[in-house]
Image 1 (cartoon, rainbow, N blue to C red):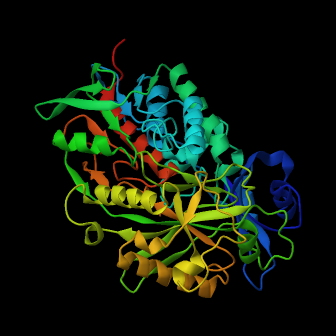
Image 2: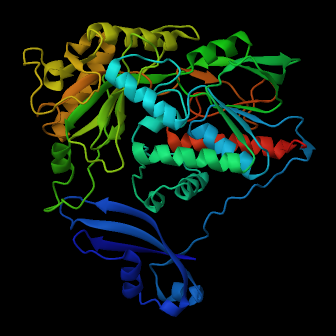
Image 3: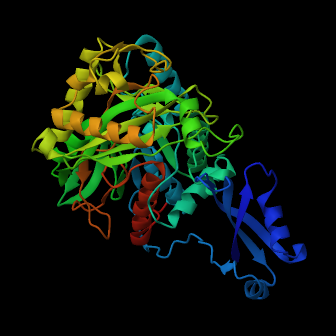
Length: 526
């Protein structure tokens, strides 16, 4: 297979495959297959705006084409294969705790290879979960087990469905292929910043669930992990919230970053845990048209382009990293609480990304110097901030113009940017929520951003708080090679265990843990 690059003007509509065939004078009779591998947008100043493509062709005469075209290079596409298969049958089927991206990917691989996994998810299935979340947003009555954090699809089910990852792992293509099989747009395999959208992601989750069941697996919703039965440093069974004790010798813990009660239970069972860094901050909202105009400023007509994104990072004078996270073009700031009398923000976009506002979390990294020593100090710091935000907003989300956050003498009133947080906002001084070092770091980042992104801190832009559930405050320790906890048979996995961040990296980690079980065991006998 050969790979070719193609640059096309934005205004020049047409199939890039056809354009490449014409440009490189490929013989159609020799083409066995063709595909788009990657597309990015080049909008640099002093360059003609264009799409940059990487394309692959499987040809009958590849050697002669490689000789003729200096631009062509030979490539070997990644084909996912299980290299090792265990021979000792499991005494009981493997169990996966959690049905977010990590648990889904692990469960699907195990099901495909005949292991008939049992998946336990503390929250409801998608249909019931959406109803419960929308009811909360309207009435303010929160169900701690049926919310944005818990349920089928995990926290990612109420997000933008972003699939961009910095993880350099060939399994990325496996995850994207499975999502496409489940109904995602094929473009996620080649877009520079692929996303699915909350609305489509929900349907994909149900499709994956049904495929696991079709392959012999089982998914039990509203069934939480209550306890572990451990004997001689080896797992023997799990105890569920339904009071059932289920034999188990291979368990994937894909609990998600908000399973605080589960972390406490694991500590009581003497699983090694450690506190880890995470980040906190606020959701920034701007008019999407403002972001478009700035990001596409070198493109005369950008009306046909998707809603623009931005990615920011800065290191403050206090040596703290400050960065944008989970940017949602054309999206909404959503209530993401899982505990009563708290406020937690997150971002969400539908597939069309056609909302009036853009939003992104602007976060500051925090560690023990901010939240104190102790295993659960970071977790308690999160809770403290979430309750404080509820109090500051009088039950709504506290909100402040970014201009007022930077300069208290300015007016703190909503103008051109209307807040989208569904439970309503209260204008307040957000400095009251964060320690001085974090406020200072955020302020420095905003001043720096204004210098490279004029208007970012004005134009009616808003901060809404507080964003705390960016990643797990706890890491469940595991062996670097076997991915197994010191307690034999337990595989901590995904974002909640502290080994991933985002949909794709979480799914990859779930696949890796499933691979370890497959390499050690054969499926349980019927």
